Structures are given as C-alpha cells and as structure tokens.
Image 1: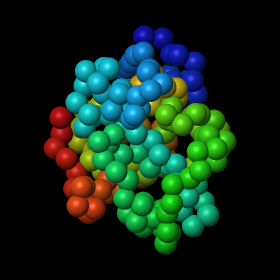
Image 2: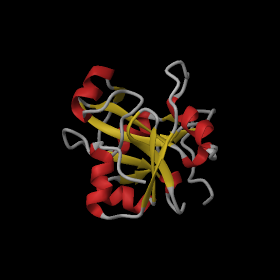
Image 3: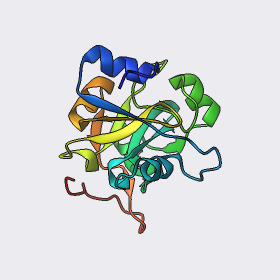
Image 4: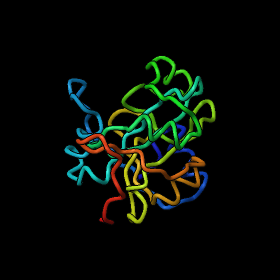
Length: 171
C-alpha cells in the first residue's frame, strides 16, 4: 500500500524498512483510539501501541505503551532520567509533534523528542503504532521502530495493581 502522506509514513518509506500501512474508518465517538484500531483491524490489542506525550521535569518525552495498558509515569520519569512525569497538555503535545491527539505517531515529529518504548514489544515480529493520523496504523518490527525514532526500551506499562509489567510473550 502506498504511503498516506504523513511524516511517519514518509520516514519509514525513506528508511526502506519493511512495513505495512493499515487504514480503517475512525469513529470520532470511540472512547479509545488504540482499542478502536485493534477492533477495526481485527488484531490482538497486545500488538497495538499508543503514543503518549509526557512532561518529565519540564521536558517533553514520548512513551509508547500497549493500548490496553496504562502508562506508569514514575517508570517513565526513571527511564528518562528525571524525578517526576505528568501527562503533557494536548496542545503542547500537538505543537511539539505536529500531530493531533489520537493520531500522534512515535515517528516524524516536528521537534525531535526522546522516545521510550515499552519493553513488552521486544521479541514480537511486528507491532502497530499510529501512522500519523486517526484511522491509520503502521505495522513494523520493534527494532526498526526503535532505530527510526531513536527509541529506548524500558518497562513503562502499569498493570491493574499499579506495578510495572514485565515484557509479554512474543506473538
């Protein structure tokens, strides 16, 4: 499938990494963009990752975690070498990345931000992340994603009990 004209799709095309682009009809009323993507594409939610922007000690960073998980802000702060993390204001996230909330990709940001990838994606042959707009997902190998975004793997996803989860099994 041809690139859909986002900075993220342009980045993977330029790097010539193996990838697939998945398009689906986005419902603006969907309560969770990532879970909607998994449902619409008929894939295991464990393979779909959401991109979140947080503020760590006054500096914006990106966290990529499974759509069914919650970001552990303390773990993100530690991974980023900081003391405290809070979710970024949506307008700040949009301005820094060049994407709208719900379509923020870990690739092709307007401004280079540190990217932290949940370790649960390691060992999987492929994962899906936003391709830069709602209704568009990018499937690629986690190692390629890490290389293209300069990402660092870390335990970032919190379980229901609030503890950081260990990497999941490869799918």
